[in-house]
Amino acid sequence: MTWASLQTVFLGSLLVFNDFSSPRCISKQELKDLADRSQTKYWNKWNVSVRLPDSRSCMQAAQEMRGAGNNRCVSPWRYRVEQEDDRIPRDIAFAECICKGCIIDGQQNQSYNSKLVFAWMKILKKTTGKCQDSIKYMVKKEFIKVPVGCTCVVPNYMK
Ligand SMILES: *[C@@H]1O[C@H](CO)[C@@H](O)[C@H](O)[C@H]1NC(C)=O
Ligand SMILES: *[C@@H]1O[C@H](CO)[C@@H](O)[C@H](O)[C@H]1NC(C)=O
Image 1 (cartoon, protein in one colour):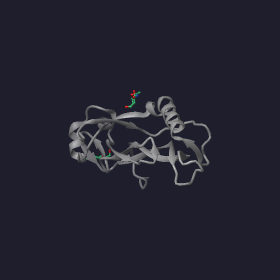
Image 2 (image 1 turned 60 degrees about the horizontal axis):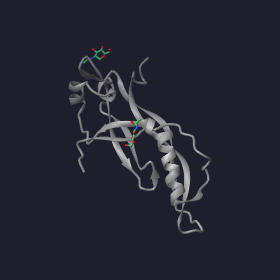
Image 3 (image 1 turned 90 degrees about the vertical axis):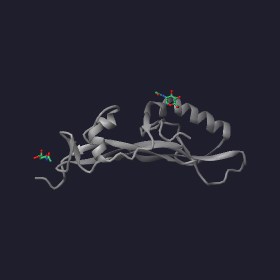
């Protein structure tokens, strides 16, 4: 595996599926079809290019300030990828703010704060319930809160 490469993963979004809010038993093929459909219809729109691994310090980020939007933002963020085998999509990129403050005039200024922004993402989860038929999976629709980026705010205590 090449870790220092760009990877394509899925960012959060509000998706619309058939109603799967209570667990349902579907076959492996049905699950694959459903995942493929959701992929083309919804998840692909949320692809992001992710630099991995990304352990830049705020100072390094302040010096870079180029490339993708998450690097040029005054509250730059990185992504980490969380993998869950029983979830579709399995890999989801979670944003993390690189700085505590914001980058103003080339340096971190802690009069401002970097703050995570979240979005709700609809996912499919293979659950542990039993299906009568052993070739079927019990699948459930869920919403998860995904950090998708950072924004620069003034601290709460400022009057
Ligand atoms: C998103 O990623 C998938 C899988 O790598 C790819 O097939 C698809 O073309 C990508 N979509 C966009 C909009 O980049
Ligand atoms: C940080 O921002 C504040 C408010 O704009 C400003 O007064 C201050 O000089 C800045 N600090 C640095 C180190 O640039």
